Length: 333
Image 1 (cartoon, rainbow, N blue to C red):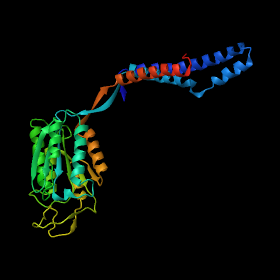
Image 2 (cartoon, one colour; image 1 turned 90 degrees about the vertical axis):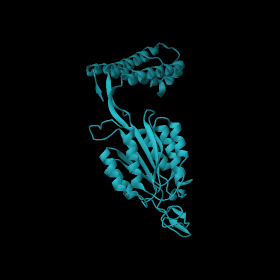
Image 3 (cartoon, rainbow, N blue to C red; image 1 turned 30 degrees about the vertical axis):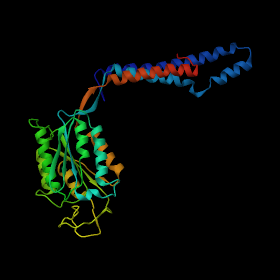
Image 4 (cartoon, rainbow, N blue to C red; image 1 turned 180 degrees about the vertical axis):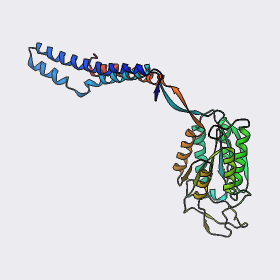
């Protein structure tokens, strides 16, 4: 934190001065208490005034003075604000393994609930789009600030077949670049954009490899945040239907087969694009990750004067001090 007028911080000297005056005044009052001739009454009064909370009004007043003094110096602080024309694309795996119920109610159900939370957490001015991918990618929602459209798109997600992570990334990059056409990269070489990729397994289909898709995101200046959803013990019923199985798990035949997430590949994608990788083995964890990302990505830091914060704090503390006077019966100096 810095100050426009730092010399006004000298006003903070009022705080110890007022405190010393209050202590002196309290002792002066105690000195004149000997005027009581009834010692029993004097004892009861003296005992009552030893209550520890009798100093609460004064302490609140001192805090109000300190806050007001800081406000005089016009403090400045770094705050996060939505980046200009910021865009986020949610890229979600809808392969057949998303039917697995090791994450309740199912992996896809948990992901849908988390994305709904994300939509409510991300700043209102940020455009959010939705791309799903199974054996191939599908653009469901063009980046928009209309959250109702995004919620509708999330509701339409259903598990399908294979897993084409690389192709999904390629589509998400193209959608993001189209939404930010004409917007220059920042000094860090990044666009005011991000892709949030959620997947629960390894790639089984597609033209681009996951790292080729990551390379396209890196070249475009788009960070990719990845979420590996599911537990190593996740399984799914196998149903025949080709080399990828009826559910796209990569297994034909009957019985149960494992559907493990691939956190290593997703972490490599995040690393290659200067993003961050997460693992989510429970519904609450995936919700927390989306909640955190919704409040943090597609923002930029800027320095703003925050004098109003301290003025507001001083006003509230002063009101609290006056309320404490009424509750305790004590007097302010």
